[in-house]
Length: 82
Image 1 (tube, rainbow, N blue to C red):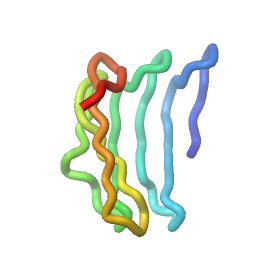
Image 2: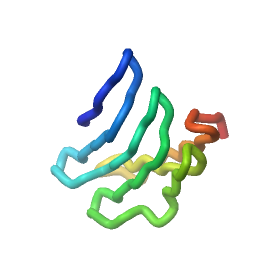
Image 3: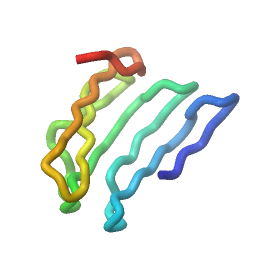
Image 4: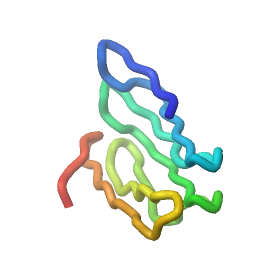
């Protein structure tokens, strides 16, 4: 994972990869809060469900080599419990 911090909080672009080197996630943060997110499945296909815009929406988190998928909901840039 590549991420940048400002004053101890995530700020800027976050890139994450699977162990097979394919891109997993590209998100943008501002002052520690998520602004946008795009996610790819382990096979390289873009996730059709993930949609985080202006800090609101849903992000799926796939686990390589597994059928496990975690669903994360965001409101106003912060994670909320489903």
